Amino acid sequence: MEITVGVTGMTCEHCVNAVKEELMKVEDVQNVEVELREGLPSPVIITSSRELAPLEIESAVDEAGYVVV
Amino acid sequence: MEITVGVTGMTCEHCVNAVKEELMKVEDVQNVEVELREGLPSPVIITSSRELAPLEIESAVDEAGYVVV
Image (tube, rainbow over all chains, first blue to last red; front, side, top):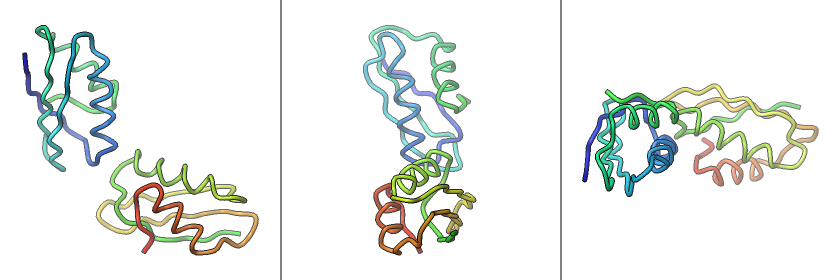
């Protein structure tokens, strides 16, 4: 299944990779795509084999240093 | 001795760290400080025990994915 969340604070591909890396560590996450929008929340599309709890996503994004909105 | 160059394209601390890392690999470089200015060239202050060739600095910054102006 697929869920899209908005993440603020990413400004470059380094930021994108940091968020992707942390989200890919969440169990059963299969793919993460980011559409970087500087100065705006960027859509982050997460594909997983089970429904993810919002806290799992928020924690991973927080670990990378960014915020789910 | 100390030299300050302007570097464009850095938007966040990941970028700053990438530039610092590459410049610290240049022989005889002792310290690198970056004053991040988004959307403008950012001053990069390089301290070294010898005079650095411009090409050494440009190559290291290029290696990190940014440009000396």
